[in-house]
Length: 103
Image 1 (tube, rainbow, N blue to C red):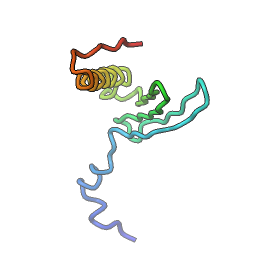
Image 2: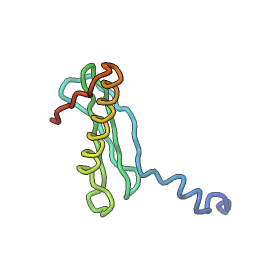
Image 3: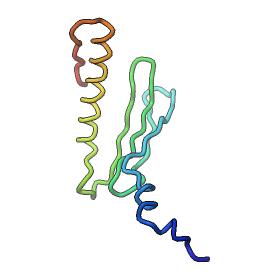
Image 4: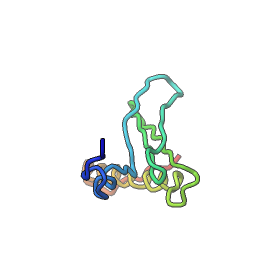
């Protein structure tokens, strides 16, 4: 059976190329985490798990890809989360934001 033209169009291929695949992967087992890899060679897999006082994030990408870098992605994600926290605290306290210390 021939593949319909719709599935061969470049926009269909582009719309199904997920550079970032994210999902919550929950576990309540202490000292453990779950993660998964990128779904495309030039993308990232990013799982997260919320705890009562923290959030665990696991980032994965293919090492052979020259356009991805999991460490750099983690750095920018950390900076973004700190900025969001600071904005929330600034609005909550109506004072200057308190800076978080990186681990």
